[in-house]
Length: 390
Image (cartoon, rainbow, N blue to C red; front, top):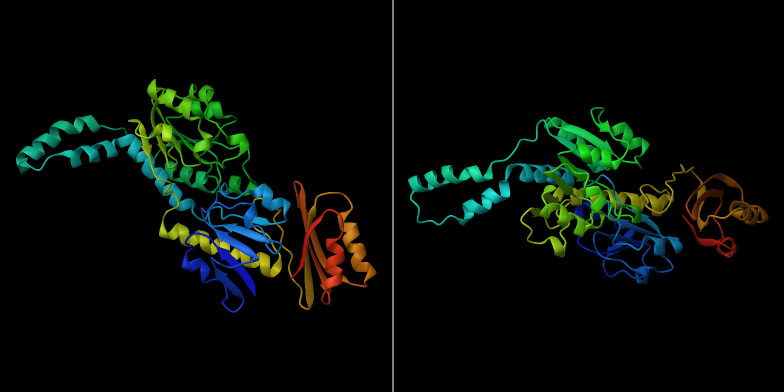
């Protein structure tokens, strides 16, 4: 029986996809085969010798020490695109709030005292509504930085709103490029996109090379009165440069789902409490996708949507047994593994080997059941990290 340790509240629609007769799923499971998590911060202390995988029900993995898990041969999954529609809708909400003075108007109306008569209230509203005059999105230019699952959807809806859409993503995948609407005008660099945009929206992971991507130098390329939307992570925007841009009027507004202490209470900031993926539908989608990926890995060894291991899928043949091997990505490893199987007259039916950065992953289908001694001898090869039979 597979043991799954859960952190956070995971959607029942996801958890019910684990067959009860084959999986033990609970928060207090010990020596788990896999961990299922949302935003809980994991550490090296959560790794045990049996742990093979961690699935994050969401896109970001900044709450998981991926490098530590990789060194221990633990595959880390995320669920890209599962919450994309929820985030896209909140970005549209942010665009409209920045363009139309919605929040300011709502706050003002709620501050009106009840002693006004109906006629007086109507007159007051007609007099004061001029202070909340906004602009329309149609005809404006939006720059989308990051054209993955969320960025591409934002681009699509912006086109439907009548906006001109510029796109920039130096790391765009082939699949993302195919999904992108042909109306998106691709930019060669970030400064070109920013200098031409009335609105700039960020949709990229928090990595070392994206930290403070929007810095003081980049802020100076914004049109005067432009709006910056950040639904990625707070670390992508240099807070000091942002505040300077807002205070001098270079930026008219900053809309984000990742408030920081320094920006709290700023009159030009629209701050949300990290609710981009906080919809029933998104939580269901993320949980179901995470569970399906864990099951496919634990039951067949196949990997899809891992952030630290290569995607790999090997079709299983009837009557075969499968060995999964994780090793450091150094020359000669596959030859040593196959030599051990050959010495024991174990016939290899099919196999697949892929590497990613410093690690390699092997699936080998054999006739018969591998013995404990065979698995032990493979594990004893220098640079082999983990071996198990599926």
